[in-house]
Image (tube, rainbow, N blue to C red; front, side, top):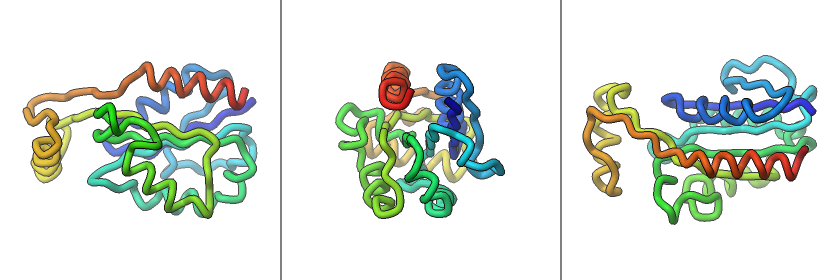
Length: 173
């Protein structure tokens, strides 16, 4: 079985998770959606992961899904979202995370992935530009998160990622 993991990463955490997924499968390729020039038809399983910034996925995600909806609907597919809201216990599933719920509703008529997951991302203050650093600090202050702009904090629950890998194996392989 050939597996493709596509990702759209803002600051690298989604890419890190995509690469982690790929390490656990034989014959798995990892690609940035923005740079992918291959054909989805050659893969048996397609996993798409994307990050949220300021409550939204990058618009190119919708464009890619819409453009490839016929193939995606005829393959075994999974989708995962990475966002800081998922650091909270009551917002860390596809059923409870407002961003993935809203997005899945938006794309429901064009694609419904077989498996879905949401993972907490990472806070990388020193890597952000000045505007993002202070906007994210404000959001974190309002939501009870880390506000020290000298810190980098990884919130990803790797046990949840491992469970997603197991779900993929059980469902698709």
